[in-house]
Image 1 (cartoon, rainbow, N blue to C red):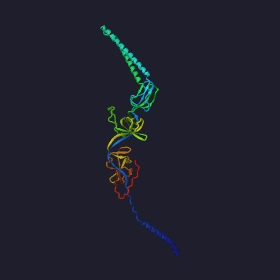
Image 2: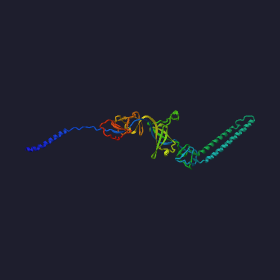
Image 3: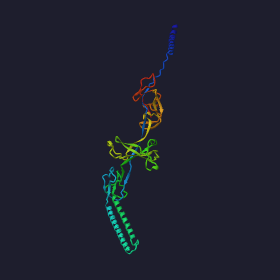
Image 4: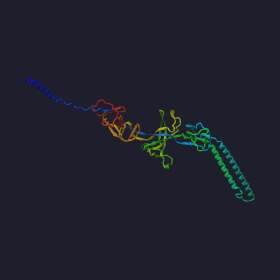
Length: 412
């Protein structure tokens, strides 16, 4: 009986002893020590800030247009009997060149008739003068003064008026004959040809559209922000058409195929009003002699061509210029202090373009600017900065391990 009880109680006792022993072992385990992970400084590229003078370049887009466009219209009717080889669309001509001729026969006959009328009126005038001299002599032989009617003064006045009228008709006939030759009013180019040889034209018929080629103009829109940095050649009421200064230089660029060509010009005037829709002021750039053969086979600057202008603006003196990627979201930059720690700072931007940003005295000369693409959340982190090939030590950190490169972050 006892043996049967031992068979039951002995396994239970072994299990209880094992449970108690396990609890004792677990309760007496040693505490694990917690260790802070080493702070690894980032490696960044940086630049030391220096003050410099900066030339502002204002960019704007525009379209080339001629300075003068004219419509050729005949002043006399007739059939076109001759056309100049340059009287073709795209043809060049000089001032005074005969572009086309209208049949002059009718006008030559009118000129001959007018010359005959002048001769006839002149003869009548001479006859009246001669008669007046005869009458005057007769009265003087009688010892009396001849009356005005006796001296044929009314007849002489009528003859003089007829002569003047005949001379005017002669001048008109000469002018009409000269107008059968359509001459170029200036050096230019044919934009549109509307008539050709053999056509009959009347007064008011549009012969062609032409434009001047001595220079071209480009109308450029400038925002209020851009106007702050461009010295415009303003005109004032008391000065008439005289500007207060010479306009700024401008470089015109155009892409032809895969090549970018440039022309030098100047801003010559500003328009009198601001566009009510865009709130921009249009200025006019002038490029002289745009159709001359340029360097390296540069093509002519064509009418209607889309171009980009870079206007030479004001020179900002003693300013800090930083790379555009160095400006972070919210107008902040990251600086490396003397202890090798990143510090963010809000800056005031004077001017910016696609590549550079000009800031005022919110940055000082000699400070170190981080140019590696980092998030502004990296502020306060230790870094190893490479400035002009020289590696600057990071802030003191005994547990610092190897220096990894900073991973690119998305910035503005």
